[in-house]
Amino acid sequence: MMECKKEKNTFTCTCTYEPCSRKGSCCDCIAYHRKSGELPGCLFPQEAERTYNRGAAFYVKVMGKKP
Image (cartoon, rainbow, N blue to C red; front, top):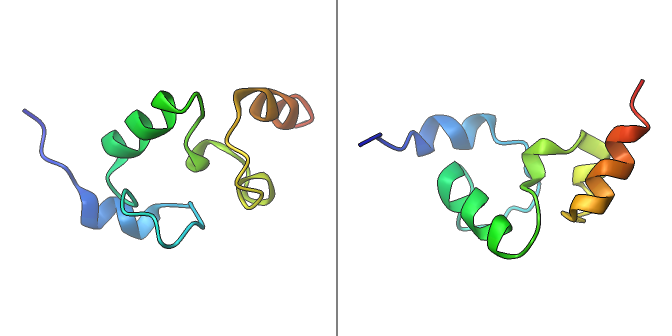
């Protein structure tokens, strides 16, 4: 069984949604967003992450514009 590195993950987490109880707990974050049909904020570029749009279609659109 793997040990959660929440303290280390929280330090490097790029998600800007501060009241999130899952911040730093990547497995919980991924499970939450997957259940909602979304992607975690850490997968998005900084400006796109700040929109809080976690939809897969938005991700494809944003990433399709990257050089």
